[in-house]
Image (cartoon, rainbow, N blue to C red; front, side):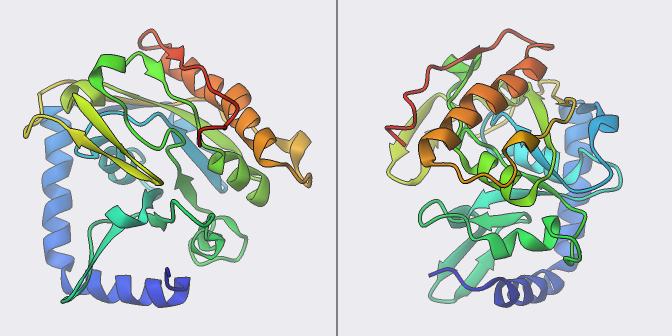
Length: 261
């Protein structure tokens, strides 16, 4: 069972303090890696609200390049904390718990653990006003389907309604060619395994933040799972596709009303 947030935060802080020098060097390397090798370009920063918000991009490519880029290098002065599947956030072993990177751990089964997100999106929280990023597709998809936006999971809707914060749709462009995934192997209630080249390609990458919007007409309402899926796929997903379409053609993969998810 996942630990409570205060215990987790203390352990993470202690772990990263021991590896502070390594983390600084890693971040400095990645900064130049994205700048020189992928020529990372960020647009639309003025669309990010000054207060708390949900950052909602398409998932694109392997090696989690899109996650690293948006978390560490998309905004010059604000932290963007990405919700990352717990199994990739830290590794449990006989020798202890090893934290892989930043962001916020997310359970893929058993519901969202909101006490992990409250510090960023609840007024008075330690990280408020925060920017929390969620990739609603749940996986990147293969390079053969790069022009398609997969159905969204409803977590983005639950967060937007619970915290009553704006949603900022985001396009992640070029990451699927910089690290092309050639095959996905589905796993039940877990992120899929992927097959991809063991190297990245010098492809230009872009991040564009679209205009924020809110689901304010739904604030305070109790929604069923079917309605959450419908809103995620008929309201939120087209907004993300609209930003992607400024850079390349994109189509929405038909969704089945959430029956298979």
